[in-house]
Image 1 (cartoon, rainbow, N blue to C red):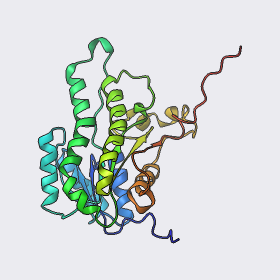
Image 2: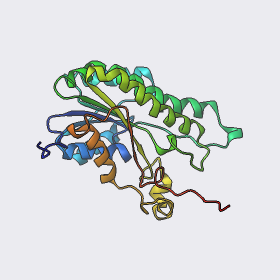
Image 3: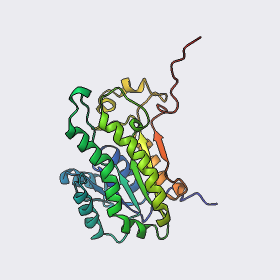
Image 4: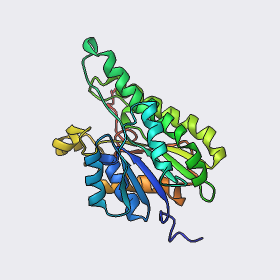
Amino acid sequence: MDTSTLFRLDGRVALVTGGSRGIGRMIAEGFIQQGAKVYVSSRKAAACEETAAALGPNCIPLPADVSTVEGCRSLAAALAEREERLDILVNNAGAAWGVPFEEFPESGWDKVMDLNVKSPFFLTQSLHTLLKAGGANQPAKVINITSIDGQRLNGWETYSYHASKSALIYLTKRMAARLIRDRIVVTSIAPGAFASDMNKAARDHGSDVAKAIPARRIGVDEDMAGAAIYLASRAGDYVVGDTITVDGGLVNASLGVSIDA
């Protein structure tokens, strides 16, 4: 047994949606440091180019809007013009919407469900041929970024976000059951509190948020990169359909309130 290169990604080609900032950028940087070539995609071309410039020559900007099926297919076509295979796809692009129950709009439902659930499915479908080519020698990987909000409730009225992340966790299992026959391994990561534009509470009030976390801190870049590298590399080849929770113990190691008889 040789584990010296178990977590390396040398020569592997990855695409990270929502890769210009936040969790997507953490993952992209980790992949690059392990030897991968990484395409980062988001709606804003300037943000993609800025991230690519910061992360070096193995980071390539490929802006696209994956909020529609047409956008997913356009991104897949753009990648196919550049690569003959795709080894790793990270479906990270997402949105949230928080409004009181009485006021929650249809637009806040549709936008979140489309981007968080529909787009990962149709982007993976659009990239199926490239992913199958990537899996010819070593299994290709699809990593869906879900959330602990798909596993537990938070205090915010984010109805469509909760529903979408729960749906994506289960969609991960269903996609995994089909795609494993093509040597494509599908998994998900459920992040907890990481500083990002989407999680402004962790970004702006990290010390307060940390008080509720068993590990007594919010997540850092290496925590997220480490989980993604594990799943993307040879080390994670036998993990199929599962969701890895990366949250400092909030979901699985928090003590409930006990009531004495």
